[in-house]
Image 1: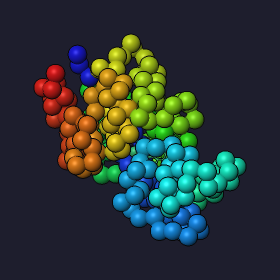
Image 2: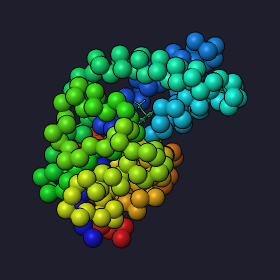
Image 3: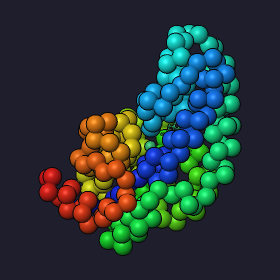
Length: 225
Ligand code: BG6
Ligand code: MG
């Protein structure tokens, strides 16, 4: 089966928003009186906002019932306020190296492109980066019930791409363990963006899109079958 759909995660794949999420969570942790180090931030990648808060609180030594739901909602909203301040200042120069050229190669090959993100801030980011037109479909955290590692976001992307594209005809580009798991659970091919030690479940891992050609990725996926 040929690849007919390419699905891209947003945070950490198209743009390094992971650092802005980290700054905002660290600010919240400081207010709560503990240090949140970058190594722990790895656990938050690809994970929903409220689940991220639970992980952060666990890192800070707080038990699951330390705060009421209302207080947690308030903390997550405050974190998001800081995060939105950071991302509202982003420019297209922050698109990660090689991304635009890679997307253009994929599209020139007749492959449809989708963006599949857990983020409820996807629209703001796409708008700041001015790349919305490079995706045939966009599915974000406001449109799905279950977040990664559940495959719902990617399966919704595949169906929104139209043309009867099957999950097995899709490749997902992901920087998070939860995202790789989601792609696998959806029966899709998966390319990890980052380090092979962390992204063990991927078919292939590349450090980023710089110097990576679509032709090369496509051929490698075809040889895996
Ligand atoms: C994912 C990020 O893309 O979106 C996570 O990798 C983040 O770190 C999640 O928690 C939800 O994002 P947002 O913007 O809705 O808080
Ligand atoms: Mg990501």
